[in-house]
Length: 438
Image (cartoon, rainbow, N blue to C red; front, side, top):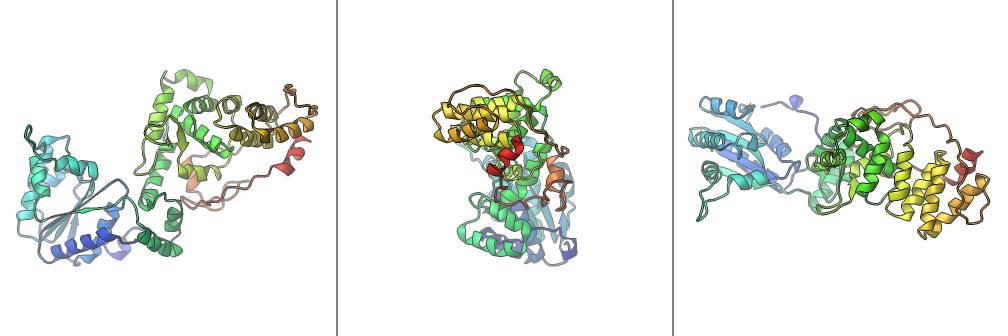
């Protein structure tokens, strides 16, 4: 078994109810009883970590065997020696419900191993959907689709332990206590929604990788959603807003090369879940027609260094398609702070025309600063050159979140993955208006 020095650096482990059942099954195996322990649950709920934490409870002379695939498993089952742990993480990769012959061979082989003179301990994890498929019984009109797998799962030496998707209140209190000395656990705990701490820890790296590997269309949609949130659009995003804003992040050559359904394909990419965490830009609920930037990227948007400011298509999109007049005013303020006065006026005017009274004051103030008479008319301001803005170098999300606390030149230092503040970055507005205009 691995020594303490060989174990990877992990977050502090907080046991839950299924850990007690798991430890009891491991104790049975160390007492010369063969066991197949199967943890069943959704993705990134802590199944694999629970198995890992159970290994030290075995005697030191036990060995660990991790077959790489079903073929290696079948080849080695006849020669594996007693006092061996057979590690079957993601057991559907071995008991593949889509491959009936393979599933039968593996199920029969594991069943034979449990009947041999041992002891043997088989540690496995399985997603709930696969557990249901493998255990599906026969009906009056059809045979069981996987009878050998079903017989294996019904064996008395098999211990099936459900793993809940979230921590309950008592367990969250234990996580809170443990997080006082564990920064990664603390920040995961603070950002976890509905007690889903495991998904936050396991899914965020996958989410970041998804963003970094996005094709052009999907990358443009993600970038547009990040900037929409950064510049103040807090309501859900309509497809019209996302598509119109995303074109601002695509060059003419890129647009010419995109397929006709590029936007639909981009949404398919961005909405796919990331190991228990919603995709970068996901539907607000399964039947919704609006989208939302994932919670983690909302926080990250306030830390990411700004690149070149979005082009005209972005500001035209938010002027036309922003969800509410309040969003238009907030976006107008951000445009004004960045010297995009023509777009700021257009956003304020659109909000005012929609009957939003809070749009009039910033509109009148900006018109006065720009030398227009504040008469409540809708006259169009003269075109102004945008204030000079020095963009920072474009960096991938992975390199950004993994960067050191020293940060990028000229930028506020940003901590590594997950170590992001919950409070928004303060925004200077009122005292900046006249300074930028002069």
